[in-house]
Amino acid sequence: MPDKHKTLPEKLLIVEDDPGLQKQLKWAFEGFEVIVAADRESAINMLRAEEPAVVTLDLGLPPDPDGTAEGFATMDAILRLKPDTKIIVASGHGEKESALRAIAAGAWDFYQKPVDIDELSLIVRRAFHVRQLEMENASLAAKNDRSHKVLGTIITGAPEMLKVAQMIERVANTNASVMLLGASGTGKELLARGLHNASDRRDKAFVAINCAAIPENLLESELFGHEKGAFTGAVKTTEGKIEQADGGTLFLDEVGDIPLALQVKLLRFIQERVIERVGSRKAIAVDTRIVCATHQNLENMIENNSFREDLYYRLAEIVVKIPALSERSGDASLLARHFQKKFSAEINPDVKGIAPDALAALDAWNWPGNVRELENRIKRAVIMADGKMIGVEDLDLAGVDNDATEFLNLKAAREAADRSAINRAISQTNGNISNAAKLLGISRPTLYDLLKQYKLQQAS
Ligand SMILES: Nc1ncnc2c1ncn2[C@@H]1O[C@H](COP(=O)(O)OP(=O)(O)OP(=O)(O)O)[C@@H](O)[C@H]1O
Ligand SMILES: [Mg+2]
Image (cartoon, rainbow, N blue to C red; front, side, top):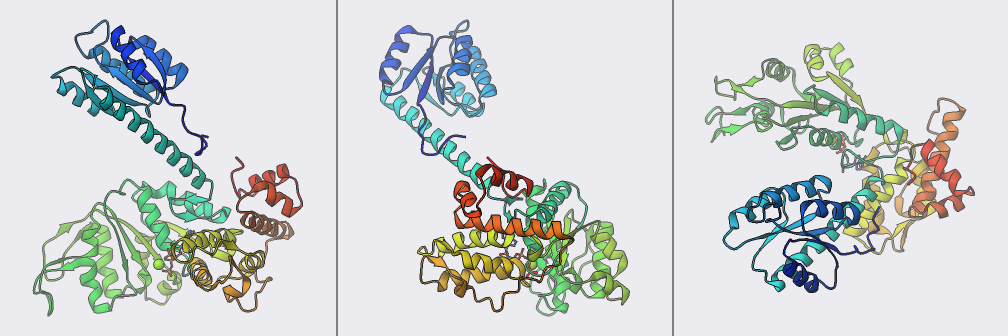
């Protein structure tokens, strides 16, 4: 992987059949490593051998020096082999159309002949500069990938949660309804958005509605919309959330709080895929993917007749159970570090990290409020901390209880202990594997093996 601090060898390939121009350009780009080719074949050979980042390309090449066919063929071949190459085409006087055509076909920029060296030089330098930035971005993105991000925004290194993310990725592109079950703060909304973004509906709306937060008498019109004059206060015709989610995804949060009468109406929509706004008989077809969430026990609700069984089965084609934070081995310290960095940057840059005793306390806490609680505690700690490190006293965790978790067997308990010790060491050393191994009193290769074994971090 390219190191972001290393600058690119500025290799420039000039594809030009006129020997006089070749010489002139070579001279003009003295500061670069210039390679010259006079036809398609040698250009491609040079591309393979030297991998220039930037290419200037004369469109009129032999055997068609007066046309542009050979130039375009060369450009296609270059882009097919190395799509990130920045190609700058030369267009003859009054041939702006072919320049534009070249841009449409993937050229990066063009210049007019006869060549103005200063102008071309500017274009070439900018191309190298942009290429450099792109490489830096790619290497940053690769680094972030290794920091346990799944579905774009979900941070986890725990197999229990990775399984959930994988499942969501797999079902994203079906139209199946998905029910997310998890305690408060486990990331239900984040996962619903992740699902939407992983699906081919991602360019359309993601519309969330919290059914528990809206008074019963307003919920119907929130969901289905209303016509002007449908009820007192309905001063204009308004689209409901379902309609807004046409083409996209509708996230029904706290679906267990929908009153029975409205459950019937929702069921009818899911079966027929048409809605009627309140105060209207006009059927409007809506195509939306439904994702719902609840922290309630819907099965119990079905038993005592407060949730319709037929609706449940429509909503729960796929049920995803989200583990509590305390069940995600190692995630508490991983997320703590993530939130600390985020809030330090936003609120208090003096705070640089989390002290070992604080990490240990975070790991031992049972997290009844899950990730939301962790986020809030770290935020407060970042504000409160007077030193560079968040200490255990900044976290306000009363009576840390280490024995709350029940383990499957001794092996599982040992693994969980390993995981949390490893995560803590890695957090403490800011991701430096050698130092983390030293802290743990094991060799670096052993630590790499453990990371692999517990899928904690891709050993790179
Ligand atoms: N795995 C995660 N990685 C990063 N941030 C997370 C993760 N899980 C949750 N969060 C963050 O924690 C907060 C709570 O998440 P979210 O709102 O998705 O949870 P929820 O299950 O919908 O909670 P509630 O039941 O309280 O509505 C959000 O700020 C979210 O961004
Ligand atoms: Mg929520």
